[in-house]
Amino acid sequence: MRLIPTIAAFCTIANTSLASPKFWVHEWPNTDFENTSVENWVEILSGGPSKDGIPALSDPDFRNVTDEDRLAPREPVITVEIEGALPRAYPIRYLTWHEIVNDTVGGIPVAVTFCPLCNSDITFDRRTDAGTLTFGVSGKLRNSDMLMFDRETESWWQQAIGEAIVGDLNGTELTSLPSWMESWDVFAARNPDGLVMDMPDYNRNYGANPYVQYDSSFQPFLYSGERPPHDIPALARVVRVGDQAWPLTRLSDEGTVTENGVTLTWAAGQASALDSKRIGDGKEVGNVRVRDANGADVPHDVMFAFAFHAFWPEGKWMLGGS
Image 1 (cartoon, helix red, strand yellow):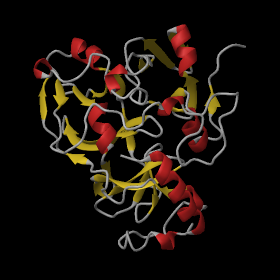
Image 2 (image 1 turned 135 degrees about the vertical axis):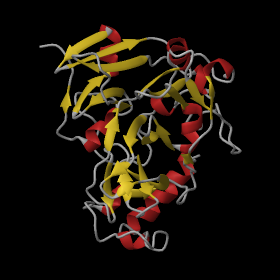
Image 3 (image 1 turned 90 degrees about the horizontal axis):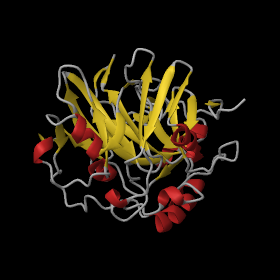
Image 4 (image 1 turned 90 degrees about the vertical axis):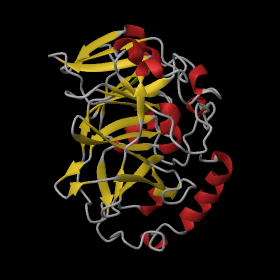
């Protein structure tokens, strides 16, 4: 859990005065800080927890959909459907506290990731030219987005873009796989024979939201970059496909949008994971799917507008109209 008010003040002071990779060497002696694409180290801040302070999961247990009785109907899950494997749901009630799940689905090693501070959920193929990687949570943030690390080289990876930015693998890009966030109710109705990740064996208040009303905030946590253009609120949700972003408000108004080779759909029934004390009681954000012209699911992300603008400053805002 990141204790936002107190840690934010401490970390801002500490990191402003020690904005240098030398500050991190004692904690990361195996990381090559000379090999980096980071130009301004002020951007990298401690989110509070140290390395592995937020424990990533590996090879979790699953239970049958019909045996699951702990999830509220509107609770969000990350859905991964890979040919040759039963569909799997990874509940946000667990990812809120662990942020990364290393798993293997249909023979493909995957990392299912969720950064609460950016509302960013992306599933990556863990295979690279350097081998299959296993990811952990560094405890560091850049533009309020989680920095992952791989245990094989201890390189740092930017979750939002799936790219290594520090270390031996600097510049290496992960392949994003189609996955999406939807309500437990929707997943279970479509996949009665599917699987859902079981509750991890950690002492956490699963189902609770440690970021109450965060997505109603004016200012993101530990973020000093530019605000989004077009008067879009910093913590408004957008659907990102590549370097394009569709405001969720537009999609919820129109229901279906077909542009630039993709069709985006919105349907009510999913709770925000970053609103109420209990995730399942959160305000309506809806279920989003993105498909190509052939009806195949397309990798995408439903993230906060400030994060899209931070990592794609030249990105295209799909606002509709003339």
